Amino acid sequence: MEFKAKEIAEILGGTVEGNPEATVTTFARIESGKPGSICFFANPKYEQYVYTCKADIIIVNKSFEPKEPVHPTMVRVDDAYAAVASLLDYVTAKKRSYRRHRGWHSKVRWSAKVGKKVYVGDFAYIGKNATVGDCTKIYENVYIGDGVKIGSYCTIYPGARIYPGMIIGDRVIIHANAVIGADGFGFAPLEDGTWKKIEHTGNVIIEDDVEIGANACIDKSQMGSTIIRKGAKIDDLCMIAHNVEVGSNTVMAALTGVAGSTRIGEHCIIGGQAGIAGHITIAENTSIGAQTGVMGSIKTPGQAFMGTPAIPYRDYLRCYAIFKKAGTR
Image (cartoon, rainbow, N blue to C red; front, side, top):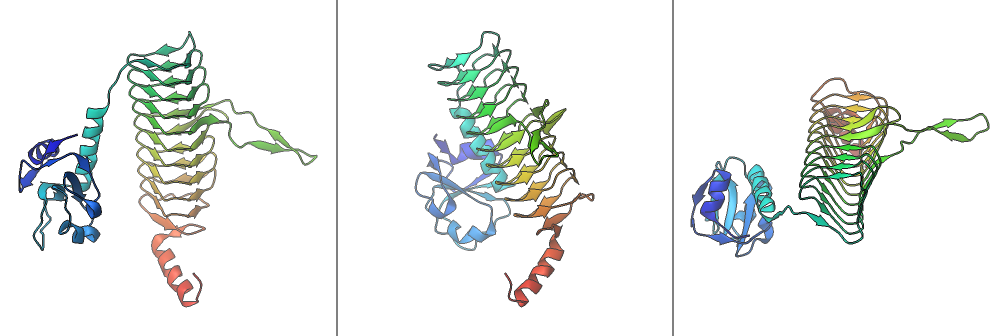
């Protein structure tokens, strides 16, 4: 990667303030920027580093007014955070190559349909009647069961397991060791005190542009489908139980657990280690803080919640003020 400031400004639709010929070859955080690197400044908490940064280029908002001289060449854009995300996408796309590859000791069943320029890593397995779209990458030691459907431009990282009959859309990213389609946690109590397993006959549907983190588990439904809607982002080590539906563009941070048959609306934000009970509904645009326990349905869109059991965020802050006065943290 090698870019000049004027090229970056053209890519991002920004303007250059400084040397348009300034050249960079790598990205760096603003605290540790060095010659030859590019940084970005979006959070006011980091303004002090703008004046000490040794990077050659820094991406800033158009509204930024420096209080001291700035050494790096500035590329001014409408939204620095969104701009650096776009630039990273651009660089990644330039590096990415799509070519057909069949790894050593990989196994693709004769009835599977594999598209053009599909990469299949060493020891990967693609089952009977599975379908893989064009330009998808299936890395080493991935298991894809019988009848699985995977779209185009997907990336399945090493060790991921996709059980038979699951459906994956286009441009989906599944990180290492994620498990898609295991049986749900369903057992019926018997009179003798033992538990009888309830068979799960459904599947998991993951729509387009979803990302699933490493070691996440998404269980298949008892009947019907567990559904992750378009654009949702599920972090590492999350647990999505059977028959759950996660709305489009909802984001869920690591170690969150969602119990069975819950419906989560669109554009929700769920913090790490949150726990969400089963058979409830969460309205769209809901924000749930880290370690929050949601025990019942949230019916009004656009609210924020914190604590266990979950209460409105402002109420939680008032309660916390009382806890501090009582000496309890």
